[in-house]
Image (cartoon, rainbow, N blue to C red; front, top):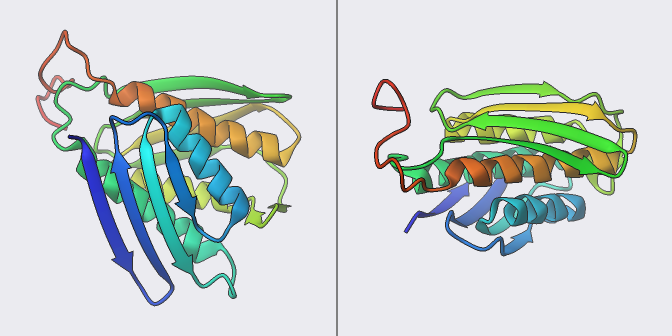
Length: 194
């Protein structure tokens, strides 16, 4: 089974993540940040991951630590669950529309962490979620999982739509990258390792 369980506690947050890469897209998410719960649920659904996230953070300060640390722990769980990455497609891409918003995502489970965030989106809040924290979440996810991740907004005005298209797009692309390919049983790399 391609699964992982990570429990991380700091002075700012306590986060538990359970991840099953071969799930059906079921999610149970409780971070104390409503819009973020909605985004992680959509991410899991579009990736066909089973995801449980329980997070308690210093929300009396702001949402920053909770959101970034969830990216760290989900990224660690993703790396552990992927194991040696034998037989997976490794790369994935998505063009995700959400009403007027259109977001392009391309990613590679390359073990070379990098984030390109080309998402012009006006500052502010979506519910209780600060818009600028989406970039911090995806950076933490990419760094901890060894993911090369490009996220680019092609169109859109509504912050909710733009961010939702990004989370769903990353989920869709990740789901494609994690698929097992029966035609090849090794690691999809000319080097033989990732």
